Image (cartoon, one colour):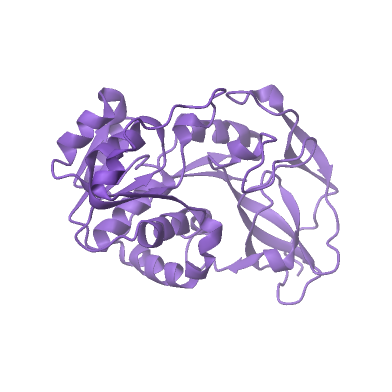
Length: 340
């Protein structure tokens, strides 16, 4: 196609230079020029337009064995990205198509076509395929409805509730008939957003006092479901407020990601015996069978305006690292996106 620009010989990317200890530092990373390769058989070349930065990326920066391979030193890091195909050597994907893939942290990516998902920029803004209609959205959907076995009438508590996953969990719970939805967040501004825009019944700033006391005040009748993005004192507080047959879905533990020593576990686990409570961890990758149902149901809520979302957009790949560190600090409201 004549209106598709010729790819440059080199483009910029972020590499991991050394494995961070505690909070990542700028010197742990390298921002470099790399060759833009021609796609091989079954591959496409994508000019990335939006990049995702997410808390789980902190775990990939360490060498510890985890559910996903660590980033390699001296190589480009990875993450969700969406962009335009500028060269194709694969059937079924043409130049000019837009695709979702996982070779972010760079301007241009050679992607195996079988790992790329075509997305429609006419159906929804491209950035939403990294957030509300992407991995974070499916995380909220699967974690609440499948892992936590949510049912109509449940009282739901969500930590990190103003983030990309948490804000969607609370709204889906309300749309599905929750009796009460409570959220915690790290600023009074975010608390106001939860109750005034996202429709939470109650919310509190966890920096304003002990989480257990604030949760008891916000949920005097206890909680049936806790969706955990934070860990630590939030998890302990939720166990303390859990009702009979309550369920806890462990999605993340951002409060301990940068700890250099293991964080102590909840002191009240024995309470699960009397409540017959259940705690279960989950990974979104185990639930991609829900994707068609998720996109259909949540896409309809977005089009009707019933489900609201926020994005924090940072401009420029040179600011990718700052955006990632911002997620760890909680600077974002909703999904943190980097626009190239």
